[in-house]
Length: 136
Image 1 (spheres, rainbow, N blue to C red):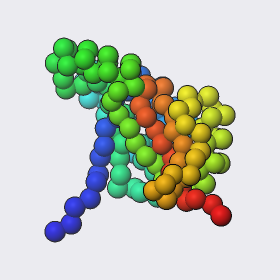
Image 2: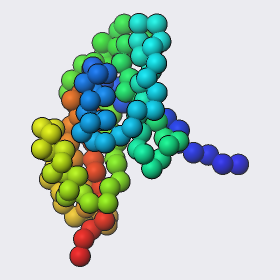
Image 3: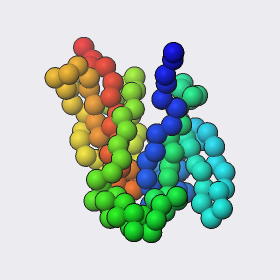
Image 4: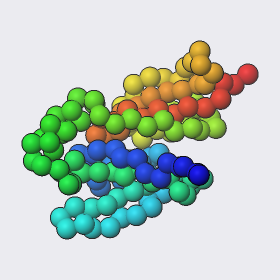
């Protein structure tokens, strides 16, 4: 029996703002953008992984108001989502994302576990890392 990751969810405060970041800054493709009543099912993913969808989710969708409020408070603190993207050149991706104005959390560094990585916050406070091979 096979098992694969198909979807993951990042809670975002503004789906249009998140779409601009993930599509135009990070370079992901839009997988699906469909209205669901007053909400929107919005997914993006890497071109090289057509089966992977990252949902840019409004925290109010499908939740009681109290839960959505609690999630928004955690999101404002940067305490909810995170994702790591594997890239060929961590330094080049760092410069591209920094030049677009993203909040830098960590400049590129060689990690003891064998990768070079860097970190940013997306416009909603989610922790975004780029990981690549150590050069040289």
